[in-house]
Length: 116
Image 1 (tube, rainbow, N blue to C red):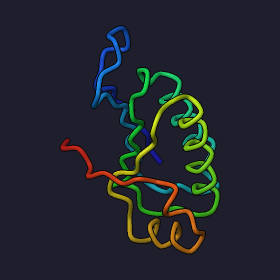
Image 2: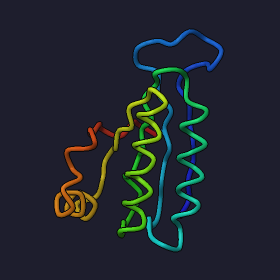
Image 3: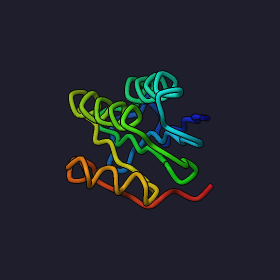
């Protein structure tokens, strides 16, 4: 699994509508990679500008198991507690099915993936 982070607003600037922090995930979100994913999401949430969205770009993520889902759900809670919305971009059909089966799909909002 690989994780990359991008911020679209200057952290020193006042909060503005549309500010976001993008975390790009590639590979598998599973037990073997849960700690790496957790660290990346925690870092993004802590560095995100005030009230900025945290967008998890999943277009290159191939698989998510219960460990990955647990990390996403916990990060969503931390983001919300910090005044951020966490949104999922381009989740796979497998992840959408996992969210549906666990009753978690309504906990997330979904956005299109940003252009590279």
